[in-house]
Length: 316
Image 1 (cartoon, one colour):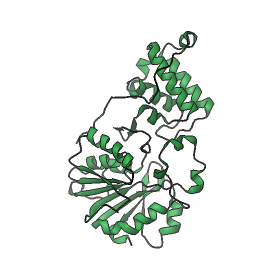
Image 2 (image 1 turned 180 degrees about the vertical axis):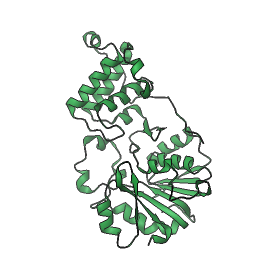
Image 3 (image 1 turned 60 degrees about the horizontal axis):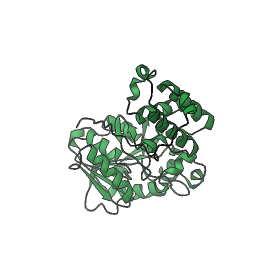
Image 4 (image 1 turned 45 degrees about the horizontal axis):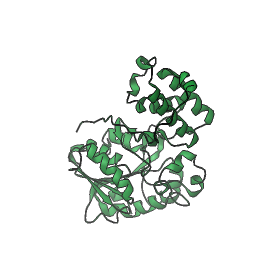
C-alpha cells in the first residue's frame, strides 16, 4: 500500500469574527501573518510538544495548513496577498493557540507522523510516537521478514496511527487495534477508512488484552499512558486538552506497562516481539522490571531510553 495524503481541512473555530479595518490593514501577505504568529507564540511562551519544535515551525504548520497550502513550498508564497476572510480565520486560530493553549493539531484537526496524515480531535492524543520511526524500517533487524508477519496487535491505539503504519510495514498482516476508549476508536475508524484499510485493520474496544480472545500475534505494539501522577500535575496547559486517560500512568507511571508485561506472553506467537514506548522513563522501567524481564532498548532519534523490545520467551 502506498502512502496517501489528504487535503480536506476544517479548522475547529467558531463563525468568523470581523477584524477591524485598521487591524486588517496591518496584514496583507502570508509573510505578515507568519511573522505575527511567530511573535505571538514567542511572547506568550506557548509550549511546543505536539509535532513542532519551535514558534517558527508551529506558525508555518498552522498558517499553511489552514490555507490548504503545502508546508514544504513556503518561499514562493511568502509575498502572496491574503483575502480579508483568510486573515480573519488565521488571526482567530493564532489567538486560540495563544489564549486557550489549544495545540495546532486540534485547531486544524490534522496531525502528521512519518509522512502520514491523520485526522485528530480532542478524543485522542495527538500522534507522536517513536515506534513510528521503527516501523519505517519494518522493525529491522528485530523482524527478519516483514512479509512473514501475519498478525499485529496495536494496544492503546488512539487515533489508529501505529496500526495504519504497521499495515504498511507488514503488507500481509492483519492488524488488530485496541483501545479502552470508544471515542478514540471512532477517530481511529475515520483514519482507517481514509487509508482504505477496513479489510486489514480491525478495531477492538478493549481494556488492554481483555477483549482479545484466542489469538496470538507476531508483533505487539504499545504506546501506553506512562506519565506519573506528579508529572501530570506539572504538564503544560496544552496537554490538558488531550484525554487524560491516555496520558496518566499512575503514581509511578508504570501501571499500564506493568499489566502489559505481565500479560503479553500469552498473546504472542513463539518468537514474537513486544514493542513498548515509555517516553524516556527507562530508569523507572529498569527499576521495576529489569530483574524479571530481559529488555532490549531500541535506538530512536531521541536516544535509547524511549522504546524497549522483549521477545516472547523472555516475558514472564
